Image (cartoon, rainbow, N blue to C red):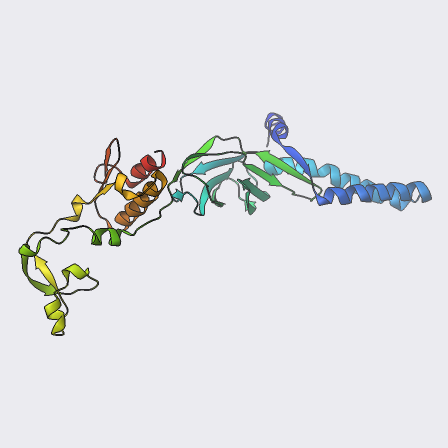
Amino acid sequence: MLSPKILIQTRRKIKQRATFGSFLLVVLIFGLFFEAYMHNFNLVYIVLFFVFSFALFASPFALRNLVLLQTTLVKGQRIFAKEEGSLHFELYANKSFASYALNLKCHDQTVFLSELPPHQKTIVKLPFTPNKRGETDIKGCTLDTIFPIATIRFVLPVETSMSVMVYPMPKGESLESFLAKQTGRFGEESDFDGILPDAGRTHASRIHWPSVAKGNSAIKKFTHEIPLERLTFDFVRAGESDEERLSQLTLWILQCEAQKLDFAVQMPSQTLYSQRNSIDAILTTLAAY
């Protein structure tokens, strides 16, 4: 059973907003009053009584629907600037009965939840497209409902202070194209030490063209090849402006992560190593630059 203290606290937080149903209710009540005044029909008074009853009962039912709801922002997928992502909210009804017809609104986006079961955590994904990188405050979020009847909208603010880290937008030259331009990736010609069968897509500098001319696809084998573990990205050389550099580095980092390649990022004041720092920690450093 809900205590009066909890009900009063929740009622103080709830704000009321008019709906189209509110306009229809006013028109209906005005029409019934006018009809009762003009003709004094008992049936009109009975209908007017039921209309008032429905309107008055909406408030306690809505209060019961919104009481003891907890909303928490949880870690979800990575969010990048100017790319559509999603905010993950955990909704929890800490009560013995369900809540119905809830709208979670945040940053001009709305997600409808038909039912929130009691004592059960529900993850809701809300579309989110940030305009800039860095730590972004998530505020102004609300839960609202027009349950049980649409004569008024009841709005419950989400008071939890929340923020998310928005990473730079991944954009620029691909990692494959960058590696193809690196001199000495496959060693010097003096290190050439035979040929190997071509297993697939290979850079042109490594193809053994005499074998290709004979109809056999083969690649050069070098005694000394520069290992990819020494792959280093230079912030200064990554682009023309800081935003271009951050976007380019973000793209390379994500592609290295997908290919499970170790790398280092040479920033103006520090060097970030993938073997020492997590990918999220490196991306956070770029986002906060």
